[in-house]
Amino acid sequence: MIPVSEPDIGEKEIEYVDDAVRSGWVSSHGKYIDEFEKKFSEFIGTKYGLTVSNGTTALHLALSALGIKEGDEVIVPDLTFISPVNAVLYCNARPVLCDINSNNWCIDPENIERLITDKTKAIIVVHLYGNSADMDKIMEIADKHNLYVIEDTAESLGTTYKGKKLGSIGTIGCFSFYGNKTMTTGEGGFCTTNDKELYEKMLVLRDHGMTSKKRYWHEFIGYNYRMTNLQAALGVAQLERINYFIDKKHEIGKIYRERLKDMVTLHPEGADYNGTYWLYSILIDNEKKCDNLMDFLYRNGIDTRRFFYPVHTMPPYEKYSNDNYPVSTDIAKRGINLPSSVKLKEEEVNYVCDKIIEFLENKV
Ligand SMILES: *Cc1c(COP(=O)(O)O)cnc(C)c1O
Image 1: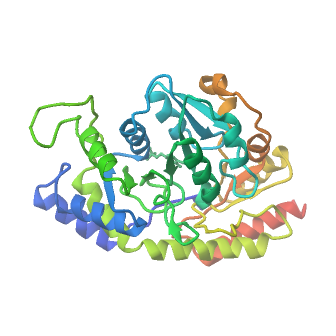
Image 2: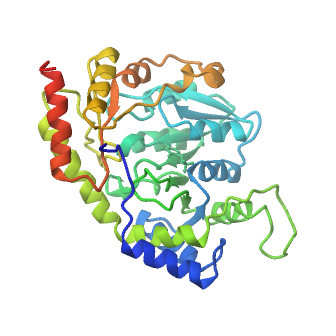
């Protein structure tokens, strides 16, 4: 089976993890944590950054440090992996679902302003499938209304918007290093920021709310959202190869683009951003054909994923539907994520294209 995404673990990863285990620093202190925090923040281009246990805790920690609480509203896109919506709910705040736009499949700034009330505190931007949201417009709206911007960059590690890495533009950037992401630490996450005060607040909340000056003295109700040194060792090794991973994603995207143009709606390309195709994705005419194509590919040894379901359609979240969602509703039905692992061989990507073309040309 050709997978949608699988990690590329090399000898360096094994060597560093082995070193971390042997050092005895197996919990959340150790040289790899320090090194990974420094190097990952440098890579993204922010002054500060801290490791956390996963991408969802990164989002919850960010919202907590910003003081998001009951009675507050946070605007989130209707087409997303569910984490950012849940993170808002963990704070007892209200997620306000916003439609996306068809240019980049991310939250549409045209819809954001209509949803702002005097309770709105923040916007969570989700950069979907390696794309970038329209950051200039979003930052302008946020400045005008005095809102925080959290960039959920779990799917767009390495994507640049007007030359800047995503995760360095908003108030806080959040990342995930789950096994299917562009780089992995097994489970893991990261928060980036240029704000020293927020950084320090996140450090305290990550570690049970304990003040750094006085052990066992808790000034806040915090969490244990720490990453281990073992995971960070994996992260340091993966980060050494991040540019190779990104180049590979571009090569894979190029093959799909060239071979499938004229056949399907291709993965969006941005004029303002250079995307990284976390999962190269296409849109098919309609839902039925989309399901049939996925079945056909599966029978030919090719795994694919359908897009996320629009958040407003799922039982726990229906009550947060307070707008219309024509674009997310349409795109969610017709979207397919294609195999996009950095380990894919050129022949495999071409085989996937052959099978898609065979299906669409009705030869089956
Ligand atoms: C993967 C992902 C997350 C969550 O990451 P975990 O590490 O699995 O908690 C959050 N947001 C988006 C958009 C994701 O794709």
